[in-house]
Image 1: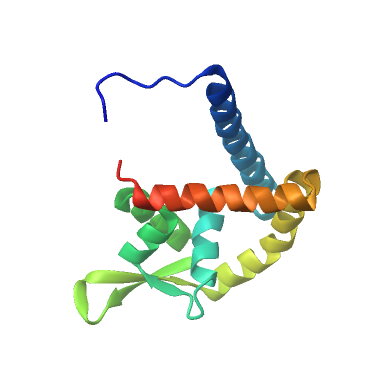
Image 2: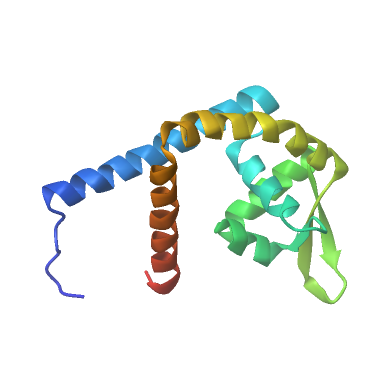
Length: 155
């Protein structure tokens, strides 16, 4: 990488800023809707979804941090809050005294199952219904290409 920044041209800057604003506004609107209809924060929902994506509903703490791409300290605080509300439990790992599992509780499953229909309806209303089938397919391709780039380029 050179020492001279390669500034974005006006078209690149416009696309980038629109993308950033889209991400911020969509995340905020979805989080507000989750809070209003299910009393879950966006962070609660993200953790519960990650755990329900695994058949046994449990994941090692470090693997969960990688799955949601959070720092350990943020995840630790979030899990502590969710444990107090009975949404997840923390279980010690018998094979590794330093390791722990995060496990979705029956109450956590009930809450996510109740929240999911409203959340999906909001995603459909805000994103899916706003795009044609071709645009939706393009969004998927673009998203996957950027995700692949994120996985291969170091910071």
